[in-house]
Image (cartoon, rainbow, N blue to C red):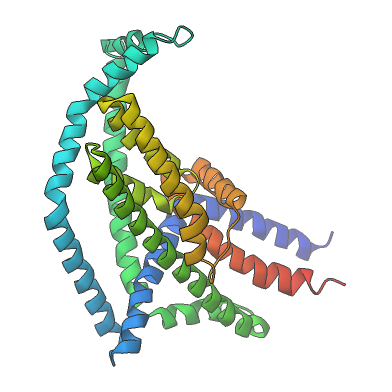
Length: 333
């Protein structure tokens, strides 16, 4: 083993340690790239329709987003806040209902006794420190989200300059491939975001309409949770179903069964019909790859890792196809 090999190995180790230490910075940066691509999709469409430069198109898109968000907030926010208050008021009744069901099952531990033990002072003291830690984490997350939004606007304002920086850091003989790779990553990520957004909106509207037809309380809140968690495939829709099921349980077991059938139909229609149709021209992620990415990044980075796992896999899949497969494996004699 010569000195160059040793230096290369040490450089890789130092780079890996530095990446791990800066993982939250890199996570914020990648989240900003995802948001910038999300902004770039309507900007590109607007510039095709109107003779606007990029800064003007960006301002128009941001103004439209603020106006649409304000209008939706004015229409839906009062009802949403009311349903959140109703959910808070229904939590004791839900706990009592679950406790009564647990008492009917002989092999299940006494849920009511465990809930009463959680109310002792010895258990509440560590809970208070956990709440303080949660408040500090929420403040840190808010700052990270603001930085992510600011970086996304700056990236969307002038993406070519940032692309030139990445290309300039690439060896000269591979710069044309790097330009092509960046373009394909942007197209794949933009297509995935557009498809998942349409899928999430469809799930939100259909779930809201279905819960309203079934007469289940808190339909708007449940539908909003189901729509947002559509961006977390495999894990998200299953977790989102728990809220409408819990609310329907307070009405009757039969109503809970109806909600379960509704969510199964919508979840399978979204997973096997709507999402593949919307993403057929962009990416084709295997469910096993998506689930493993979510589990790995969730274990390493928590909830932000779960949320950004799928966009990262979309980009890595393009890189693997263009670099590992075409440049290495296909040329390996």
